[in-house]
Image (tube, rainbow, N blue to C red; front, side, top):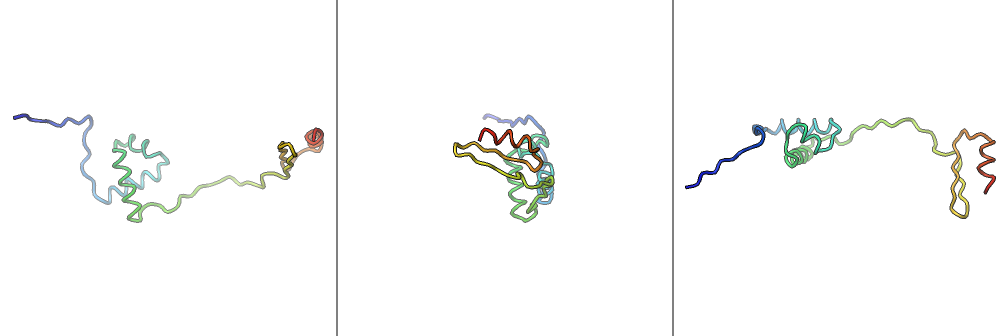
Length: 107
Protein backbone atom coordinates (compact mmCIF):
# COMPACT_ATOMS: atom_id res chain seq x y z
CA UNK A 1 0.00 0.00 0.00
CA UNK A 2 1.37 3.40 -1.01
CA UNK A 3 0.95 6.41 1.25
CA UNK A 4 0.82 9.86 -0.35
CA UNK A 5 1.55 12.94 1.73
CA UNK A 6 0.65 16.44 0.59
CA UNK A 7 3.42 19.00 0.95
CA UNK A 8 2.58 22.70 0.83
CA UNK A 9 5.18 25.38 0.16
CA UNK A 10 3.29 27.83 2.35
CA UNK A 11 1.06 27.56 5.35
CA UNK A 12 -2.54 27.12 4.28
CA UNK A 13 -4.92 29.83 5.36
CA UNK A 14 -7.91 28.57 7.34
CA UNK A 15 -11.22 28.66 5.44
CA UNK A 16 -12.83 32.06 5.48
CA UNK A 17 -16.44 32.93 6.07
CA UNK A 18 -18.56 35.07 3.74
CA UNK A 19 -17.97 38.30 5.69
CA UNK A 20 -14.20 37.81 5.64
CA UNK A 21 -14.24 37.20 1.87
CA UNK A 22 -16.22 40.41 1.38
CA UNK A 23 -13.69 42.28 3.54
CA UNK A 24 -10.83 40.92 1.38
CA UNK A 25 -12.67 42.03 -1.76
CA UNK A 26 -13.19 45.48 -0.26
CA UNK A 27 -9.50 45.72 0.68
CA UNK A 28 -8.63 44.81 -2.90
CA UNK A 29 -10.90 47.56 -4.29
CA UNK A 30 -9.33 50.13 -1.96
CA UNK A 31 -5.74 49.01 -2.63
CA UNK A 32 -5.43 50.27 -6.21
CA UNK A 33 -3.39 47.14 -7.02
CA UNK A 34 -3.99 44.61 -9.74
CA UNK A 35 -5.53 41.33 -8.64
CA UNK A 36 -2.19 39.59 -9.20
CA UNK A 37 -0.26 42.14 -7.10
CA UNK A 38 -2.83 42.04 -4.29
CA UNK A 39 -3.00 38.24 -4.25
CA UNK A 40 0.78 37.91 -4.18
CA UNK A 41 1.19 40.54 -1.48
CA UNK A 42 -1.40 38.88 0.78
CA UNK A 43 -0.55 35.28 -0.14
CA UNK A 44 -3.99 34.55 -1.56
CA UNK A 45 -4.43 32.42 -4.65
CA UNK A 46 -5.17 34.56 -7.70
CA UNK A 47 -8.20 32.48 -8.69
CA UNK A 48 -9.41 32.54 -5.07
CA UNK A 49 -9.23 36.32 -4.94
CA UNK A 50 -11.02 36.57 -8.28
CA UNK A 51 -13.80 34.32 -7.01
CA UNK A 52 -14.14 36.39 -3.80
CA UNK A 53 -14.36 39.61 -5.84
CA UNK A 54 -16.98 38.10 -8.14
CA UNK A 55 -19.02 36.83 -5.17
CA UNK A 56 -18.72 40.19 -3.45
CA UNK A 57 -19.96 41.98 -6.58
CA UNK A 58 -22.86 39.55 -6.95
CA UNK A 59 -23.83 40.16 -3.32
CA UNK A 60 -23.86 43.90 -3.98
CA UNK A 61 -20.99 44.75 -1.64
CA UNK A 62 -18.62 45.83 -4.41
CA UNK A 63 -18.43 49.56 -4.98
CA UNK A 64 -20.56 50.57 -7.93
CA UNK A 65 -18.34 53.55 -8.74
CA UNK A 66 -14.92 54.67 -7.64
CA UNK A 67 -14.25 58.38 -7.30
CA UNK A 68 -11.55 59.73 -9.60
CA UNK A 69 -10.26 63.22 -9.01
CA UNK A 70 -9.23 64.98 -12.19
CA UNK A 71 -7.25 68.18 -12.42
CA UNK A 72 -9.23 71.20 -13.46
CA UNK A 73 -8.93 71.64 -17.21
CA UNK A 74 -9.88 74.47 -19.46
CA UNK A 75 -10.60 74.02 -23.15
CA UNK A 76 -7.82 72.07 -24.72
CA UNK A 77 -7.09 74.32 -27.70
CA UNK A 78 -8.03 77.87 -28.60
CA UNK A 79 -7.83 76.97 -32.29
CA UNK A 80 -6.85 74.12 -34.58
CA UNK A 81 -5.80 74.67 -38.18
CA UNK A 82 -5.70 71.72 -40.59
CA UNK A 83 -3.77 72.18 -43.82
CA UNK A 84 -4.86 70.36 -46.99
CA UNK A 85 -1.73 68.17 -46.85
CA UNK A 86 -2.69 66.95 -43.35
CA UNK A 87 -0.48 69.18 -41.23
CA UNK A 88 -2.19 70.32 -38.04
CA UNK A 89 -1.37 73.43 -36.02
CA UNK A 90 -3.01 73.60 -32.59
CA UNK A 91 -2.94 76.86 -30.68
CA UNK A 92 -3.15 77.24 -26.92
CA UNK A 93 -5.03 80.14 -25.37
CA UNK A 94 -1.91 82.16 -24.65
CA UNK A 95 0.08 81.97 -27.91
CA UNK A 96 2.19 85.11 -28.44
CA UNK A 97 1.39 86.86 -31.76
CA UNK A 98 5.02 86.57 -32.95
CA UNK A 99 4.95 82.78 -32.55
CA UNK A 100 1.61 82.63 -34.32
CA UNK A 101 3.12 84.49 -37.33
CA UNK A 102 6.05 82.03 -37.38
CA UNK A 103 3.74 79.02 -37.30
CA UNK A 104 1.37 80.32 -39.97
CA UNK A 105 4.10 81.72 -42.25
CA UNK A 106 4.88 78.39 -43.98
CA UNK A 107 1.16 77.64 -44.49
